[in-house]
Length: 266
Image (cartoon, rainbow, N blue to C red; front, side, top):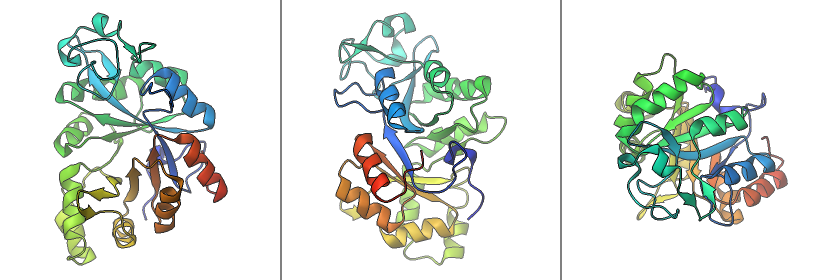
């Protein structure tokens, strides 16, 4: 495999599976809050998975949904609201929605897996990466391959990237039937700028993460990260298959699993 992008290491470590805290860590449902991110960091996590949206006046937020309604006491679509209005909303009625700048300032050693949720955030995220020199600290993710590539094209040097749903689908469907050399050729354009396949265990009735899937990814120099895994037995099973990272809501349980295996590196 090729030398990994700096995103995949933290504290000088470059081996062992990545532990990614999904929207931070909060048993109280305070996802994507500074409290949740802080709890994950306090556990020793150095890779956080989170999401970005942008307000109507161009402020980049760490938030999953397109609207405030599900997890805050506010209402409305973020892309249609000014930042001053969004700033009054509270996650779970308690926590403000954080800015990207807040998290990188408070936790300067943390790596961020950033899921670009809308086209409104392409330019604002690229500008933030450039402004704060985050190229080595972030992985740009999106279900949309086009959106992920649009961010990467605006960067002065590469940030890490993960495949979108179309690229992952190509790899899942073609991988078992094409020789490695031909698979590399067919997926070369789709996987440009990609270092990781971030996938669920299954897409509907299709099992994605198998030992053969992991081996095919590794032959092409790609890591496999699996989301969102909250059961310790399943964590062990996936790690036995050779996956390179696990995204979890239960950072506490994943840490225990990795400690048991002697694989906790964060």
